[in-house]
Image 1 (cartoon, rainbow, N blue to C red):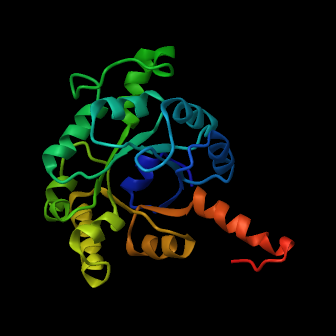
Image 2: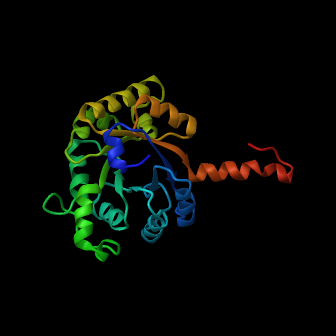
Length: 245
């Protein structure tokens, strides 16, 4: 489909991403060749460092890249955007005030507090600033009981483009991985719809991604690099006399 990630989300279109945690620019290049709607580089729980992050984003070419930063800190958000990311995903956002902090760190003055610099932006700083104001995506994660309670306010925070549900941590926080978790997921998605903001959810495989997209999520995950490698290596065990897993 044509159009920017932001424009597709605005019309409610579902997009599918590949989640990369292994910190390999080579894997990012191969992943981009499969033409996903977006690559997500996980710098919170994954193995990405500043240099490999910049390298991977360069290898992604025209494919949009979102970086999940480690924390809601201006220097981490700024570094990911300086590396050339289309946008950021900020984990563990519990309040509208924290969501507003993420927006501010992603915007140049006077709209925000982002510092000017970086290798890629400095090639054409004036043009980059203009594009950044129009195109940078700010996504925040709800993954705690407190965040769930404040879902409507978080989703309605000016400048937020998407709320991404961290279902694993949300289940831990709620102490419920069954019906209670599903009710929470539905509540967050409905809060996003009311605020006219996209809603995303981590999905572990293609079938789950299709199901969640049909429910109305604008970002789902089709696959992740670690799982794909495990599956590939397991499939060739039969060459050595083993059974494929």
